[in-house]
Image (cartoon, rainbow, N blue to C red; front, top):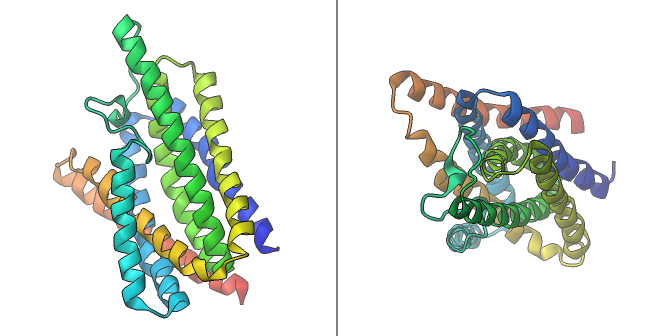
Amino acid sequence: MSVLSWILLMSFAGGVMSVLAAGFFALTARASWVPMLISYAIGALLGAAFLDVLPEAVIASGNIAATSATVLGGILIFFLLEKLVLWRHCHIEDCEGHETAPVEPIHDHAGHDRGKSSVIIIMFGDTFHNFVDGVLIAAAFMESVHLGVVTSLAIIAHEIPQEVGDFMILLHSGLSRTKALLFNMFSSFAMMAGGLLAYFALSLMQGAVPTFLALAAASMIYVAVADLLPGLHKHTALKATFQQVSLIASGIASIWLAERLVDILID
């Protein structure tokens, strides 16, 4: 397949298919499954960042110091974006976005206003997030098919638990199951838009690919460490800790195995 075909396929899988999978989990799975999904996603993100994306960025740029500086700058940028409520979830005080279990919709006047605000924030942030993921997928595939597949798998791994959380927020804000699914589906198409735009833009400036790869690594590290990891500390029991460590290790191992499999298929 051509690079563009790979980008469209994996952007579709990362966006639309992740929403459908998340919808299935959100509407049928037990709330206790969500921490397990998050633990695995953390491992997949960190594995992709440190085992694949960063090494490729260093090789492409030929400058370790510049790549490291870009990663650090990217982490700071994502922190600032999150502070401005533009990255992933709402982070306002007492935000419903951090609830992991579905609850009854709120119907009082104040609750209605707060729920409506949450829907707007979540949809805006999620659309922006998906668009950036599409850009990252395109940048990775333009470097190599191998890197593109691994990066896409990591993005899909963290998209599913994120979308599960978004479903919970939208349902809690008073939306019906059908509307919550449609809202998330609409947002997911931003990933394909980001992939297409990045493909045609990056093809005109190949020198920017190492920078985008470094930013991709920064986004994976930031989401894993700043957004997902803190939630695991709510479960402090020894059994839960062992499960979390095992699933994080499984996420890292799956990226390593995927890398080996892609090498075999390409060769």
